[in-house]
Image 1 (spheres, helix red, strand yellow):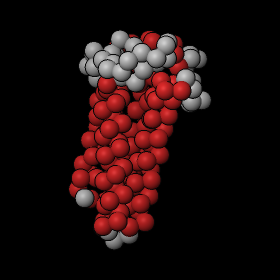
Image 2: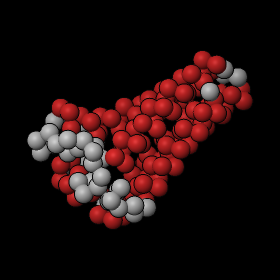
Image 3: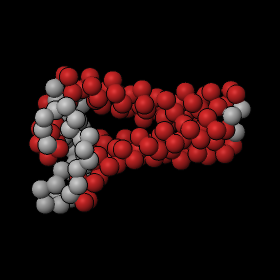
Image 4: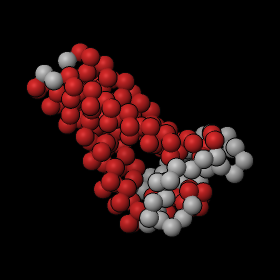
Length: 156
């Protein structure tokens, strides 16, 4: 289970970096994002997404399940942050305070500029921003990584 958790954590982080920096339109629309936005997003989030992998390796090497549980908790917190950012506006019409930190835009405006033209499979809910397929895949990878990390922690 440890190997599965590691692979999923690394896959989610790599997927995040690639989809944040590489233009894969219409899957993503980073061509519409400002360079500073892309770099800030990767600089802030990629290390957080990589931390569970480091903790899992350390936990395995040291035989300390507490480190693996910490890895799983970090992955879970990152997942919950992503779900809050993307799913609260869609399902409840609520935008989290950090959604547009430093951009000077509303989440609806930022979404319209950078994500609304990407592949979106969810039905409309009024004028609410919808999670795109790119982020639905990322959240699925993170959910699987979280589950596997907790299972790996139990096995150490």
